[in-house]
Image 1 (tube, rainbow, N blue to C red):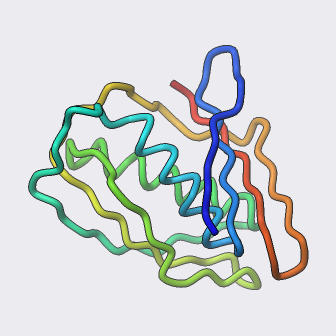
Image 2 (cartoon, one colour):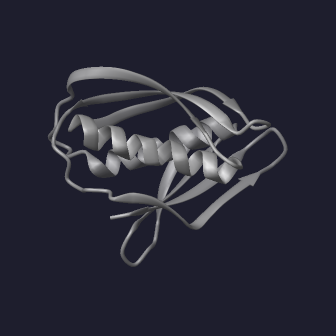
Length: 137
């Protein structure tokens, strides 16, 4: 199970992702991010996949770094994200391998950065995980 929802915030984009695992929750946040950025009338063209690894000092830092990299790749390549897949996620070493799909398309919203402010992770053992991520727009 994967799902995202938008949380109320005065000026920024606040997304909650939930899934059966931490990886699912990260993918759900990405899904919400891409849905908010991409214009509904945009048809994905020239889809390309990019694989990257990311690390962090702790789990929070790792997730923030993943989304910082996603935003950078979209800007560098002048493309919008369509899908993020967590290939592997090592919570002991705080590392992850990510497959990011990008495509040509019109962005309806420019996201400047991902922030540590209001970030949270809630885990119930090895089961359901909820992540809240605030993006600066």
